[in-house]
Image (cartoon, rainbow, N blue to C red):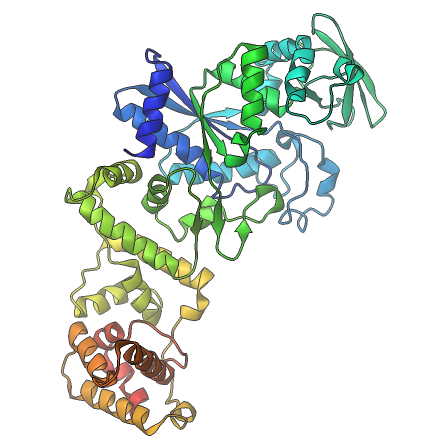
Length: 522
C-alpha cells in the first residue's frame, strides 16, 4: 500500500462522514523557499489526491506564515540591502521588498515559490496569514487565548524542566504584539482586562500602548497556540511537518495538548517528514540563504520527475537532489519506471507513485534518455537540429517532445557541470601523444584506420570494436576495466584534451568523421 493511500484511509477513519477533508501545509517566507519546504506541500498534496481517488472531496490549504517576525538577515539579502537588519522584529509582510519587484519582502518570496507550484501542477488554496490577522479573522481566537492564558502556561510547563512560577504564570501572555510606534515585536504585555478585550503593552522603543483587541490587529498568537487555533478555525484533518515537530516535546505534541486541553480542538493526523539535502550544500535553510529553490531544481529536473521523487520516498525517508552524475541515474530510473507503468508492468506501490506523479498520466510521451542527450549535446552546442541529426545516425528519434529535456541538459551542464562542455581540439595533441606507450600508440593507429576505412559506423559496431581493441582475453574482468579506463583516457585527450568525454562509441558513430579523424592521425 502506498504511503499516501494509507494516510488517506487514516484521515477518513478519524471522521468518516466529513463532507470535505482539509489537508494543510504552511511555510514562513523568511527567504527564498527551498526545495526541502516543498515536502510540506507535496506530502499534503498526495494525501489530497489519494482522498480524491477514493471518491472523497478534499483540498490542500496552504498557509503563508508571513505575519512571523524577521529573525535574521539571509546571507543572499545582506549584499543588496546592507541595512536590512533594521527590519529585524517586523513581520515579513510589512517589510519592503529589497529587490524592488513586489509589494513586500514576503510577497517576493511567496510569488517565486507559487510560480514553481504552478509549474509543478499543484492546485492550492492559499491563505496569507498577515491578511487573516490584520482583517481580524482570528480576533476571537486571540481573546480566547488571553482569557485562557494561565491554562496555556500550565500546559507549556508540563514540557519544561524547571518548576512552574506563580509570578511568571500571572504575567504570561501567549502573544506577539507589534508596536504601532516602531513596527517591531520588541514588546511585553503587562496587563489585560478580565474579558480579554483589552491589553496594555510596553515596547523597547519606549512606547506604552493600551489597545482594544478587536480594533488593534497587530497581535499574533505565539506559534504553539497559533497552530492549534488555526486547526480549529480551518477544520484541518491532516498536516505534515518536519520530524523535529513530532519529537517528545516538539511543537506538534505541545500544540496538540493545548488544542485538546485548552481550546477544545482535536488535532489533525500528523506525519513527520525527513530532511532533503543538496550534495555539497548540506541542510537547507531559507533564513540563511543556503538553499536550492524549486525554481532552481526545475531548471534541471522535469516537473513529473520532481513529483515522482516526492511520491516515491515515504515521508520519513530523507533523500538528496544531486547536481552531479546522479541526475542521469534519476532520469534513467524514472524513464524505465514510466515505460513499465504505461505498459501496466509495475507493482501496486509504483502504480500509485506514477499515478500521483504524472501530470498527463500514462499518456506522457517517452523521451530520449537524459544520459544520451548529455553525451552528444555539448559537441553541437546544444543545437536541437544538430542533436536531431546526430541521433538519427544512430537510430534514435529526436522530436519536439525532447527539446524541453535538451534545455534541461543544457542547464545542468552549463550551470552545474561545466567540465562536461567537451569541445574538439582544433589541432593534434602532439605533446600528449608523445607521452603514450607504444601499446597505446598502436591502439590510436588502429582506431584511426578503423574509422578511416568505414563508410558509416553503427553505434553498436564501434562499441564492439573499441572493446575488442582494448580488452585482453588473458586478463581478469577487473584488469580489463582498468585497461578500458586507461585507453578511453588516451582517446579523450587526443580528441578533447581532457581525461573524460562523451560516450565515445556514440560520438564516433554520430559525428561526421571528417571533423575529428585528423586528431587521431599520427
